[in-house]
Amino acid sequence: MKKQLYKFIFFRLMGWKITGLENAEVKKCILMVLPHTSNHDFYIGLLTRGISGLQMNWVGKKELFRFPFGYYFKNVGGEPIDRSGRLNKVESIAAIFDRKEVFRLAVAPEGTRKGVKEIKTGFYYIALKANVPIVPVVFDWGKKEVRFEKPFFPTGNYEADWKILKEYYRGAKGKIPENGIEI
Image 1 (cartoon, helix red, strand yellow):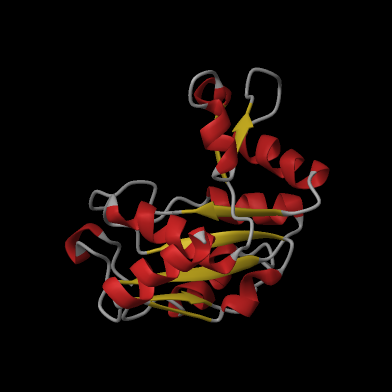
Image 2: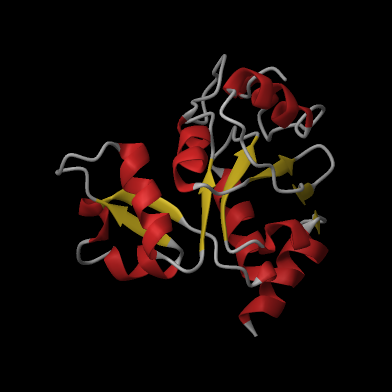
């Protein structure tokens, strides 16, 4: 019933579409979501997750997962990370991939909804460390489309790989285009 409601809202009322969803069916990956220029991207992501039926995850500091919100955050794909030990953030998240059978980590590499000149590279190094592909996910407000591209395995050469990855996003418009990176 909930899935039907999500479809009605997303497809009928909002006029959006989802393409390439079969590309997100890999069990472990980084879902690289761009452009991320507005708080509105959050509900686009939740609706996409609900319609697809695929588990999609995000990470947050462990303190977010305490009562009263912990249950809700886990229910919508949240996974707490504990950085109190010797692991840095990349290692902490890669360790989650090791212990989970299914983990599709959604990351917005712009890091904020405000204007940025370049993306943060943590998603890339997490994919390398966890040995998982990056699935480019395009939130194109101009076409009202969420597009899942083919999985891409990073080579270890960030500069060369970024040239390939950014092509998936060329021409995509964020909700507030001036807040996105120039691709």
